[in-house]
Image (cartoon, rainbow over all chains, first blue to last red; front, side):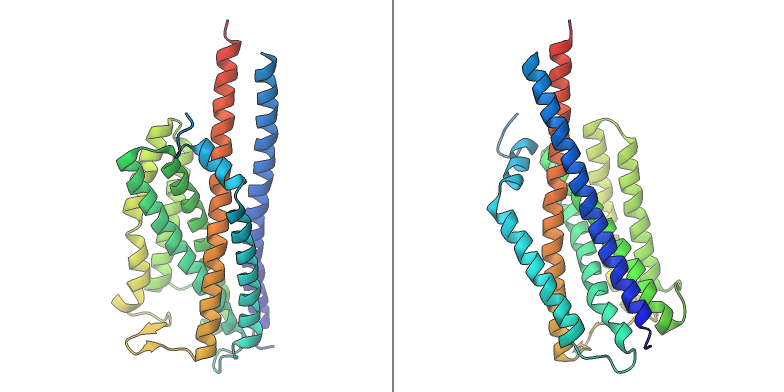
Length: 46
Length: 242
């Protein structure tokens, strides 16, 4: 099997880490943009 | 404050920029090219076999880690000189990404070491130095999270980013200064790789560098958005006070 399982595992780990981080950034950005909209609306009401 | 280098301005420029879209596209194309080069173009290494292909992402991960810590070093120096929040944002974002890619180096290295050296880990100088570097920078990020005052947080991070950068040349030179089982890629007679392998590595290095640039900009944008939230909250509190 020529140690292929280690090759697959290494690439899986690398891509998982990269995509997990990008997903985290994306979710955090959406949450912050929602919060900004809410805060701007509240400021306008005042 | 909405000066040219304010976080709000930088955040808006990152968000609305055509350059970011082009950068994303370039990174995607380069990564696809890298995958082709790694799995199709590059020949199979005679001694280690297919598992040697981990090399083509292991080295670029290390390169991006070094680059990220260097950018954090520059950001730290810049912050101590100019005290601009934007430089703190650059420094923090780059530190975080540096830790991320250093984690990838350690994990991919371990997965490569197991079949080749018959061990997941050894206290080899290069590996040990990399682990020390990783622990140091994780510590910097943790320390930052415990400090509340913004300027103090940024100053501590800046000083530690500058000091911590000494780890990078130590990691790089460890295989030359001390006895090690870690292979030497750049020897006194050039690189010990066949030309197709060199090309695959260069394409992967380019792809990872572009990926770093994309992620850095997105991470910086996140910090700018957090600053905007803080500013709006303070404005709201000021309006709501009797």
